[in-house]
Image 1 (tube, rainbow over the protein chains, first blue to last red):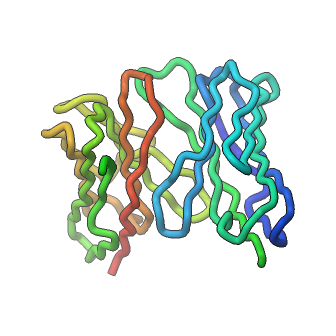
Image 2 (image 1 turned 120 degrees about the vertical axis):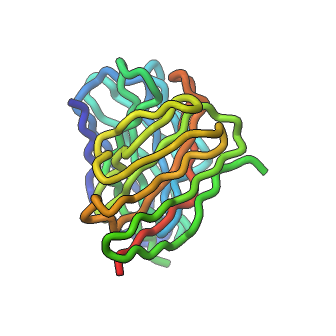
Length: 114
Length: 113
């Protein structure tokens, strides 16, 4: 059974720091992995999607990597800003389902201190 | 503007009462989903629908019901059988047919009086 975990559960950093969020999954048979951002009391916004054949994706100050064989992904945020404060969730699409099934991790709550 | 809307933003339920959460999308997506989110946990799938007039149970369907009479709409009813309904409920949609990412609505927070 696919399980997704994220460490740490919460992270607090001063503004300007570079930081890394971690995501682990137990079954490497996935179509893709996606990182989402969730602001308090809001829905999810997709940040980056990495297909299983890819190693990384970049968007602005965000870079996500995928090591499928080891079941790991990282989200790197460069030069963090207070506006980056949110919960970040990773999610995998497992192979072998009849619909767009997605399994989510519990999220990492990030606080960037001015 | 294309997107997913959910209403209401906050909903209060009295004991023994059924309540219905609305989800509408104008993205022309075939597939729609309902998730429940509790503090410190990931999203858990309640129901999903791949096409009009068809829907399937997810991982935590007990105490919930849905309908899919129109492509644009996928309402969720929280019945009195759901003993712990307090949570944040998120609706999502995707192109379907294993082709697409999911797009999320803004969510509804359900509280019990």
